[in-house]
Each structure stands twice: as structure tokens, then as C-alpha cells.
Image 1 (cartoon, rainbow, N blue to C red):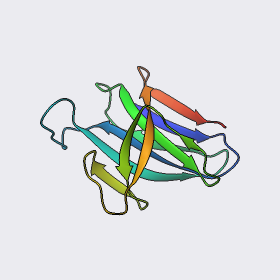
Image 2 (image 1 turned 30 degrees about the vertical axis):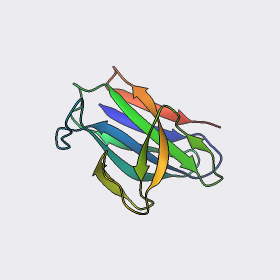
Image 3 (image 1 turned 90 degrees about the vertical axis):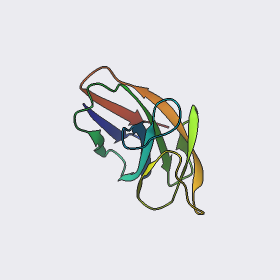
Image 4 (image 1 turned 180 degrees about the horizontal axis):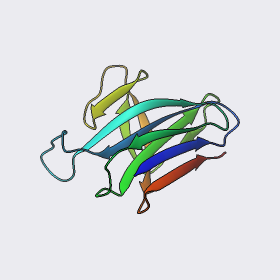
Length: 116
């Protein structure tokens, strides 16, 4: 499976996502990790997640633009301003609360279009 993000918005965007992780262990439920930031210029598409993900079909995605527009409203995670790949319960003193939307995919390739 490949998860792509396409920036159909008129300014630059930065993207982060949360994904099921066997590496990150928590006491209950599914373990999740979070990673970011992918920078996309207008009309640019990037693969943010790829590999053997056929057994997983739900992810979470956050994006924000240089003009302050944000995509995400379902759940949240604390994310730093620099690149990261952390377990979902990890944060730092510079982390900012970011909202994420659910992304469902039962197809091998999915593209999320960020529009205003």
C-alpha cells in the first residue's frame, strides 16, 4: 500500500501522519506511531507512507499550510516543529497540539487531496 498526499491548495503545506506500530507498545489497545513533516508545494504529490501495509487500513493525517489553514479534526497528537518519527505518546517541550483526520483505505494505493 502507498499513501500519497497531493497539495491541491494554493500555498505550501506540511504533512504528518499516525500509523499502527508494533514497535510502540502501550498498555491497552492498538499501538500507534506518528511521523512528519513532509513539505509539499502547490500541485506537488509525495508518498508519505509505503511498504507492506496490507494488513492495516486505518491511519490519521494532519496537514497545515503556510497561511494557517489546517486539515484535521478527529483526534490529536503533540508534534514537534522539526522532523520526527515517534511513538504516539512521545512529545517534547516544543511540541504543539495538532489535529488529525481518519484515513481509511482498502485499496493498494490511496491519494489524499488537500483542498481549501
